[in-house]
Length: 185
Image (cartoon, rainbow, N blue to C red):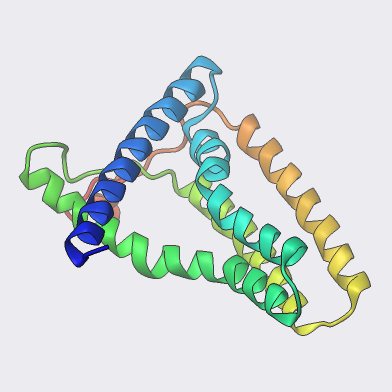
């Protein structure tokens, strides 16, 4: 195939992916409304499960169907690398797109952020991630199984907290709190 054909396929795949993302996001939002679930639970559970399936399938395929030491390294790299990619690449891109969309008239330069939910999400993530990283340095299979059980129990408890949250969370005006132009709740 020629370079032009690869470029056309790349652009087509990006368009298809973005269209699928728009449909998925809209569907998840309506599912949450129909089930009367808080927005935090919709984003933290429904959307997170749907959007992490590709990252989850890579380590599963590598670990269970791969051969040799490479399988574990690929699986571990995918598990530990995804959060770094999200925090170092995706968050700055989103931060750059917010003012762009405001200038285009598609939305305001404010977004709603529930600080209590963010603290809960980050707290669970940091503890769970620390457990996962610790397992990378501890060769004991018994410790790995124990960590797996702890992580599953943590996630079940996390889901209980998220589904128990009220529809409208605590609000805060970030522009007043932090002196910025963005209104964050």
